[in-house]
Length: 254
Length: 310
View 1 (tube, chains in turn orange, brown):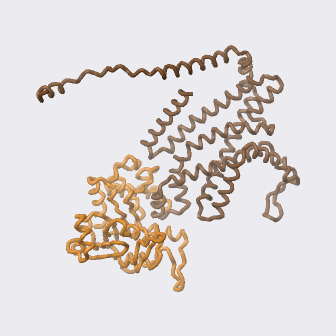
View 2 (cartoon, each protein chain N blue to C red):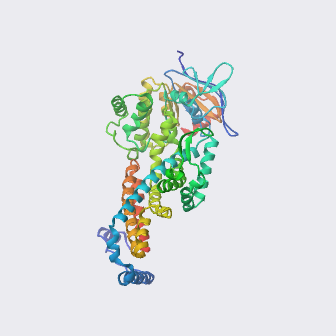
């Protein structure tokens, strides 16, 4: 098995006539944490959604763990994967959304146990045990039977992280996980993510948290208008950016 | 005024305001008119012998009437169950990316919402005229597996009523279910998909349970309408509640008292449904508690306002 977890080759994506991704090339190694920065509308979130095939790419190739995303290549033609296949691959990739998207009609514990029992076929008891453990790890051991409506944004997002982790994913995607949070709630969520990075999880994080990127990321990618403008080690990209666009963005955000 | 005086005034609690209220003579006049009308109706109810209240008492628990009540409940329940089932199927078809499925669903809804229920009931009741040689079930365009030579022995008045009511209800329920499904935010589906759940699992475990919150209140209304619409089946001489009372007054000519008997039973049954709806709404309001309670209160208040003004 190769050490490359995600590989994008000249990935293009358009919505109607609007071209959102204009040729993305990048690689994420196993165990690497990559932070994607850039102004809104630059295509970061779209790229993230392409990785677990919530969006279909229009051109180029996108691989996760050596396998093509959404298609099967028989050397001659691309075949669309059956819905079942797509679902099976998505089950191996965890995703955390900006707006949490917890299931409001289920308690925190039920949110975390649902997919393991229904998708992976884990026994109810085993799923409960693991879910309890995960919720304790993100500091919510006392909120197991609480419904999302009664949780703060930061707590909801940590439940969402536990929910994704319960599937034992090999890759975690974070789509602006702290952008919808009150400033004082951001810290707990970032702590949970920091912990995860230390445990060796491969992560792609779309974020505006420069501090987090500087501290946790192995690689920082700066995107603008559907292309990768600049990428590299965080100290280099964030402290001495080479491109004008990166410079002006970082100057404004910091 | 100096600052020291100001602060001294602020330390004690000021006197409670007792203002003279604005006069609203309109309210008093409106209330008086309503009370006069109500009193005259009440007087008529009490003094007009034609209401025949002792007949009402006599027939309220008549075995034929009670049987009619039972049949009405059966017909309502069966038609709603089939209607809701049809509605879910039609709604999912309507939202399907397959144009044949969504087109068929659209056509169904267009037809059954666009023709009067009474016409549909008569149509089903007279279906034998369309298939005089019987009805069968089998291979399309091929031989029948089961065959009924007497169409009317299969399509009895009950079956005709059930078919008409449930097929018609399916069209209305389809729109209600569809509204419920599209009320669930896209993010819910995406979250379920990102966890590897299939389309069916997502619909059954994530989307429909949340759609229920939107589906239940209008379904309650539909059930109440259905209960009352079963009275239309009386045209097929089927002994539901209205027809049961008609049979009695055809003999003793006490039309008004027996219609009152029927109305009392319809009111009793719809009132029971109100209570049931309250509890079902609370069940599916889990996880939405704050908003749910607020809306429930608003509805009851609105309800009281309505009856108060009527």
